[in-house]
Amino acid sequence: MDTLPQTLSHAAVAVLTTAAPADKVRLTRAFAAAWREGRIAAVGMARPPDRPARPERPQLLLPRDMPKRRKAQSLAGRVALLHALAHIELNAIDLAWDIVARFQALPDGSPLPRAFYDDWVTVADDEAKHHALLQGRLEAMGSGYGELPAHDGLWQASEATAHDLPARLAVVPMVLEARGLDVTPSMVGSLHKAGDPESGQVLQTIHDEEIGHVAAGRRWFQACADAAGRDAGAWWQELVRTYFKGELKRPFNDVSRGKAGFPMDWYEPLAS
Image 1 (cartoon, one colour):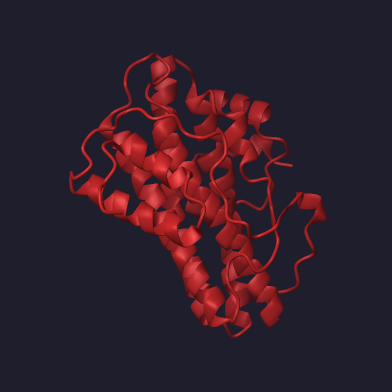
Image 2 (image 1 turned 120 degrees about the vertical axis):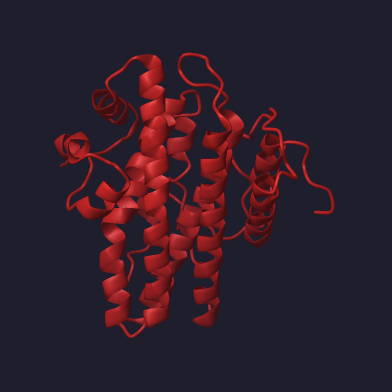
């Protein structure tokens, strides 16, 4: 792109309306750098699409129609695992940009500060890096993103919370991304056991950086609770019960969640 968007919100919409994953990654990394360096200076306002643009591949299926994944000990199993994670990271890029474009105010009507946008631009940039790392590993294995089917359930959390910033924060970073902290360490171990330390290191990098994403969700949820005069823990539980279809699953990675500032007494009562 020769010219930068006028505002951060227009940059967000440009990414959301870009279908090709490589272009989505490239634009995200360029816009994030421009925001950090002050070449994009204003937040602005631009309406995000209801759904982000998507490439023709992968084929999107209902979760129940997805083929059963093989164990990571086989090459096919590792490819399927990394492909599923690449799909999650692609959605995560769009989720981060959607929150940038969609929300302008705290529950009391006060404008969101620049620090809010700094955090979610950083999240988007990280997710673009993660997708690119996974794509690199898939290519090294003779595959690539789009070669396998993927499920289309990931955007539902965005659609359900499009009207409500506290609900979005409660569900996306503090349920879905926190779940990634719980399950990734065992994946890392499986990949090392399978003789694939390169993929294991990619997943370790993703895990370590996702702690910061959960922390950002926790931080801005607390800001919303303070603005609304609500008890943050009780309100988070109420919103999760309302907008997350399912129960939180044990075991929890209490250590990584703790690094993100996520108290056990918030999520333990909601566990299955």
